Structures are given as structure tokens and as C-alpha cells.
Length: 244
Length: 240
Image (cartoon, rainbow over all chains, first blue to last red; front, top):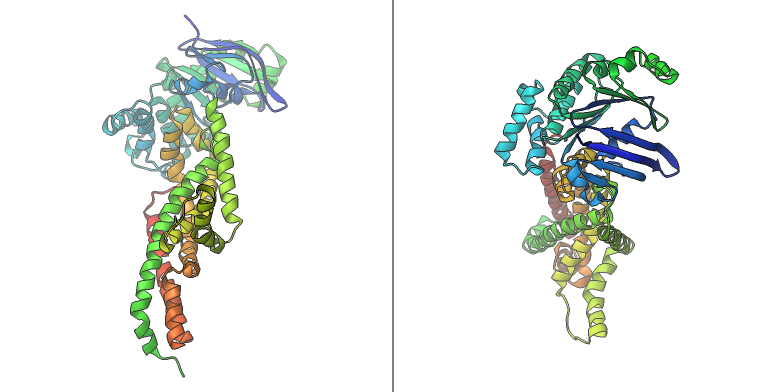
């Protein structure tokens, strides 16, 4: 099976600061990759390179057959196959939950208003928010907003889902509802790359765990194994730090 | 010689004529200015993160040219008095045309010159309002739109535009009112708007107190109406 996402000796710098060094990484369809590491280690940047929110500085990145940076004029095609969920939700504040979710199908998949709303209704039902479809983001709790945001990202039926610390802005009691939705998404077999500090998600739903440190991938393996016996000291320290 | 109401009553028909013209110049002027200002404000931001990130290839060149052109226009208009702009468009432009093309007698009538002046003048200030409002839209929201793979035009019309518009209403309202009052300067190019009507009546009966009071009240009524319309629009906008 050929890789869906492939980093080949990728580097990324912001001005003088190099945040990613020589990343080589290949992700196959259906993998649920959990990306962990201390803050500033480059996890979010790596994630944002996949859908071109950041353009890589060196090396090559192939996403769904499109070569970056060579074909960066085709970046929209990449984005139309990649859904993204952000730490701070970023639902469109002037649209109801239903219209937020229907937005992608309408604009990207060119569905009619009714068809798109049908898709949106199904997805809101799946994330348990059918009764909130006419509420505006400001009328929803953080956990509910994030579930709508997941539905919005899924609505374009993407091949890849990216999650950038989706539970970090939530109270502990609201995290569970979001994690449950994410686990359900993972079980559908969609390819996922998840930046998180939730080790429970890694062990329950992850098929692969990457530990990033100082802009490099320093551990790469099965989540269960790595979490049970962390081989390196850095990873041990990190896991202690996040209270696992 | 006290305050005599009858001079006001007598002046009403002429003042109404003037007010009608003031209103006419203002409405066309601010609508045109809003269109021009929106275009110039977006040009000012072409190719930046705020409107969907950097562009590539020839679009990049176009973006830089747009930015420079918008900055030039905004600085030129903000840096000169509106009365000079009106004089230039009405008196100097025909001469410029004659010198450069040899065509004689091509000129705007004073009303057209007045409307063009308001459009160009208000447009420059509104361009900055539009830029500020667009820049105030949360970067994360813009990224959420970009990440869905929608086009730049869709991003601006469906995500950035509605959010920015609501924020732009208070400063736009300010500019609308300033533009309305600026029409009084067109007395210098002979447009028979409200201030000029007042001036003419005053010159014939010397009732400065009554006439200028009436003129001031007319302006107040018009600016209040404008403010009220804006308030209604703001209230009707969805929660942002």
C-alpha cells in the first residue's frame, strides 16, 4: 500500500529559527497517528505542513499524490481532502451549528443548500448534537463547539483528519465527550494525525505513536508498547510530566 | 430685532431644495465610496495572511502592485483637503485634459464633480476602515476557512466579509456622517446644496441667526436619520 502522507527530509524554519529538522515520515491510509512531545517541539508545525497552512522550507512532502512545494499551486486540492480541527474550535461565529457543518459540502463539494444541510444534520446527529443544530457557536459549550468543529471537518468527506490539540482548551469534564467522538471517527478507518497530550486517546485509539523532541521525531512505534515501556529517558520524563 | 420664526418658515422651501441635493450627493457618494473603499481596502491587503495567505507566481506580482496602488491612493487623498480635491476635479482637471490631450471644454458639471469628490474622498477613508476590520478578524477563523480548501473569493465573501462588516459599521457610520457634512464645502464649486441655499437666503435678508439655525437643524435631522439607519442595520446583523 502506498503512503498517503510522505515527508522526505523535510525542514521548516521561521526566519532564523529552525523548527523541523530532517523529518522522514510515511503515513499509510487508515493509520491513526498520535503526535506527542513537549511544547515547542514542532508537533503543530508538522501537522500544519500537511495541509499547507505552513509551507515546508526544504525537502519534499507528498500528500495524497500532490508534491509540495513543487505543486504548491495545487494546495487547495490537498486541503479539500484534509479536514482540520483546531485547539480553539474556530467555528464561524455568524453561522448556526448546522450551517457551519454544511459550509464545506456547499462550497467545496458544490452541493445544493438542502443536500448540504442533510449531510450536516446526519453528522450533527453522529456527534450527538442534533438538538443544537440551530444554535450559534456563542450559545454552545466548548465541548459542543469542538464536536461541531469535528463534524464540520468531516463534512467534506476527507481522506485525512488533522487534530491540533483538540481538547487542550477544554475543562476535564468536557474532554471526554470530544475524545469519544474522536475515537468513533478513528474506528471508521479514516486516516488521522492527532497532536494531543491525551495519552488515553493514544492507547485506546492510536495505531502509532510519534514522540517529537526539538524538531525531530525521536520515537516512533506502537502506542501500547511505547507507553508501557518508554525506551528513552526523554519520553519517560515527558510521560511523567503529562501525568501518565 | 429678535428671533423671528417667519424668516425660517419662509426659507423652508429653498432649504428643502438644498437638503434634497445634499442628500442626493451624500447617498450616491457614500455608496460609491463604500464600493471604492472596499476594493481599495482589499487591494491594500492583497496577498497577505489576512485574506488567505501569500499568492504564487504572477499573482504575487499582481498582489504587490495592488498594494502599492492602494497605498498611493489612500495617502494622496488623506493627505490633501477635500476642498482642494473638489477644486481640482472641477477646475483643474479640465485644464489637465486640455494640456495632455488637446481636447477643450471637457469638464464635469458641478454636481457630478461634487459626487465624484465625495466618492474618491470617502473611499480612501473607508479603505482604511475595511482594512482594519478585515485585519481584526481572528486569524484562526481565517485559517479554518483556508484549511477547507475554499477559494480566496469564497473566503472573503463567506467568512471574512460578514465578520468584518459588522465590525466596520460603527466607523463606517462615522465616515457617512462626515461625508454628509463635507457636502457643505461644495458651496465653493457652486452646487446648490443646503449650505449654499442658506447662504443665498441670508444674503438677501441678513437674518443670520434664523437662517443658520434652520440650516444647522436640517443637517442634524439628516445626520440623525443616517445614524438611525445604521443602528437598525447593526441590530439586524446576526450575532458575531
